[in-house]
Image (cartoon, rainbow, N blue to C red):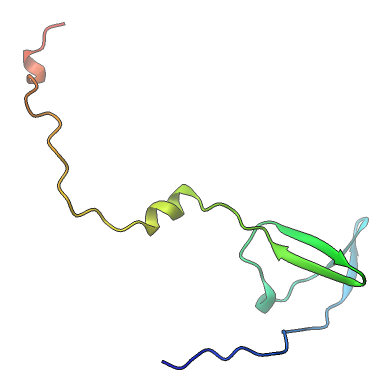
Length: 88
């Protein structure tokens, strides 16, 4: 399998800055999209650094990542009286 080639120069693109109400904004091009709902902004001099917030996986994501169970579940009803035999 061929190794992935990593470019020494980071990807860059020129985008337009615009106003959205009182805020300054940019559109993030599709090939720069984050797989996140939130980001952290940091300012270093004239640079603005945008980093995705690492969110906790949802319960659904955790459960779908688990390996299927192969062992048999024990019979938890073994030794109990049948429901028809119980008088309340």
